[in-house]
Length: 53
Image (cartoon, rainbow, N blue to C red; front, side, top):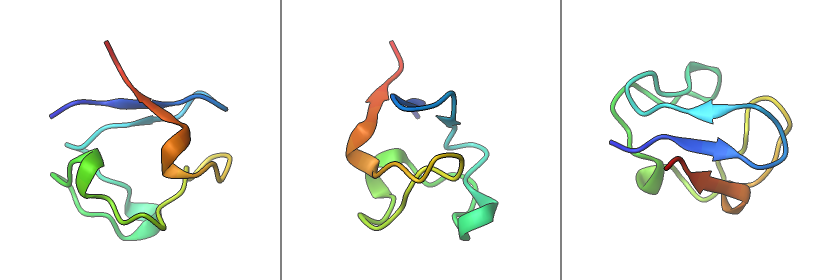
């Protein structure tokens, strides 16, 4: 499972951690996050994230 970086802040979405602050359970891939999901640090939309190399 790939990790994704927010291009507006330092947040990294790690699928094995999920995002408990928004009810996203562990194991959810970035691609399967709801379109309404936003960065928990800066509020950036999902389309501002880039896949980590």
